[in-house]
Image (cartoon, rainbow, N blue to C red; front, top):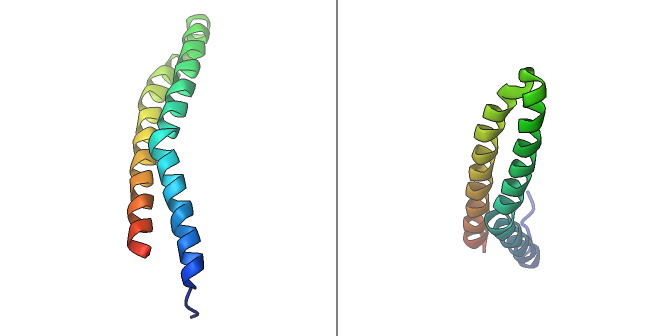
Length: 85
């Protein structure tokens, strides 16, 4: 197996840090904004069609869980980037 050159490792480490910072700082706010929009519309729809009321509970648990996973993934990317140099 060939060794990866130092310049390619540096580029990948910088990319991992940038993506990790995005996942830690920007992505949670994007997820929260989309969650608020989905829940607002879903409340209106579930008032008209009660079959959709289970979606409120589903989105209320799933989106924060995904937000937490993305945050942990961002931290992992930054830690991996710092250890690969």
